[in-house]
Length: 296
Image 1 (cartoon, rainbow, N blue to C red):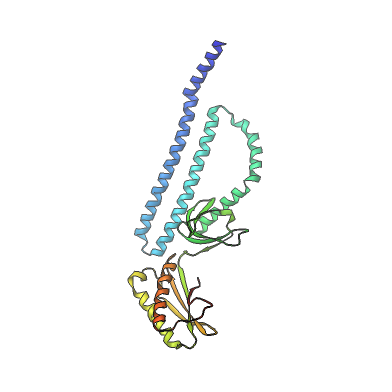
Image 2 (cartoon, rainbow, N blue to C red):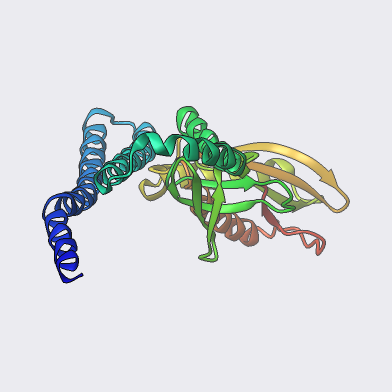
């Protein structure tokens, strides 16, 4: 019995020096390869973004390209890392001594079982692929996602986008994780360009032409200021009287801005209009609705 025990110890020691060492090297190598892949991905992304900054002078196009590059690099890195771990797992199974042929039957049964259970995963991956391919949105975009069964959409900034999930940070700091297969409709508020729509309520007895002229002057001055003109794609436009209500009429201002800049532009322009109309005593006293309302 002692001789048998010594033989087992000897065989275990021999195995650990050969197969065991190979398994450890494969495991360590796969982890290092995955980290190297992540480093290559980050370096490639930085290089492509720098190239976009030098080759593309249009800030709008540069922003869209940067978001697309970030999303694609993330997806490719995730795919390569998955392949590395899958191959290393197969190599470890072979080193352990389990014949691959004996795994065919169990793998078939497991594949059928996973086929039913992984339908949702496949759906998420396919949906994520089309989000990337069609450039529906990217990291940094401000979006609203409608999901099945949800009465209110999820709104926020996209912090991470992979083939399987989308991570959204809401205005209140909440991190929402949405499987890509659950995305039914997306409202992208920072794609290509954004727009401010301000509705201004003015008392019906006010002089219409003078009020419109005052608002146009304020908008013209606002559009010429360097601090704010850098965010504008076109000068602010006062479209004229959009609606007539009991006691007041409604004027509308449209401003086309760079992606995701509409809110800060709207806040500043709303303040300018409010002060100018207040000084001119042209504000509506209606208590039923706000004086200056941002429609979108």
